[in-house]
Length: 303
Ligand SMILES: Nc1nc2c(ncn2[C@@H]2O[C@H](COP(=O)(O)OP(=O)(O)OP(=O)(O)O)[C@@H](O)[C@H]2O)c(=O)[nH]1
Ligand SMILES: [Mg+2]
Image (cartoon, rainbow, N blue to C red; front, side):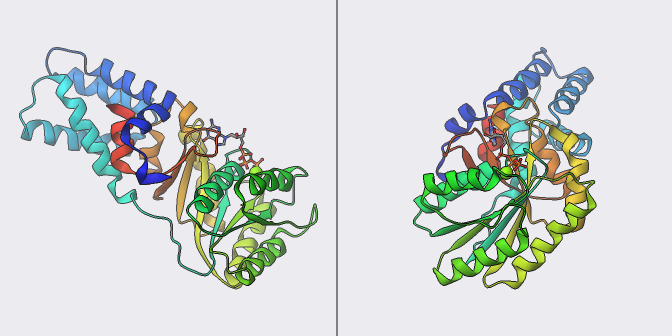
């Protein structure tokens, strides 16, 4: 997973996101000279790729400055400057997941179907392959098939799993899973939670309780990751803000980027939600999760 993935592979795996983004940008930059219209078309291209108003204006500001400094006159030359501007705007998102704690505990939250369980499965694969001992906590006791789905991932990846009773208290499953992981000297606990609507106050309070209980168990709750479906784009952000009112989010995971025409949403997560993007989901397979890398992303989506 992550930095070992070459940029050419990102290019392929960004799929629809890359195709839509680069097509919009190259059509905006197809003229003979840089006119005011060039900037307008580029602004339109970025907004329609869901880059978001603030991030678009910041990018265009950086790009105008870079273009005048390097005396660029041909619109096609703006593309490589744009790649650099995107990479530098996202550079602060580069980073590792926080592994401190024995075990380190990472919790995944988000609306129904955003990709939480699949992300956990892929991550379990990458972590066990790297020689770490992983325990999955089946904190989705709400949906009947949920812990079955997680068990399948545990079986595929060699991770351990702790499950509770259907309809049981998810916080106590999570507590047991962390204590079990501690007793087994596991390195990492991945907590799956039920999908929930941000407007359901009871379910959102339950999430706060899971976080509280996970924080009291042995080990350290070092990541609380909001899983967002990139295909929905910025429309999912209203929900995201509400999750942040109940739990202390440390970052975002953007899934389904492989099938999204709104790849620009990666840029608006930072500017609108003030969360670093930590992981990207680029498909449904075991290997389709990458650690966020600003440079690889910028080149992959545009070059
Ligand atoms: N193409 C693609 N599909 C994905 C990706 N991540 C998840 N999916 C698919 O999205 C669907 C929902 O994924 P889940 O992992 O079950 O989502 P969830 O958030 O756990 O759903 P609930 O538990 O019901 O809230 C599944 O069909 C996944 O295979 C991705 O990065 N790319
Ligand atoms: Mg799930």
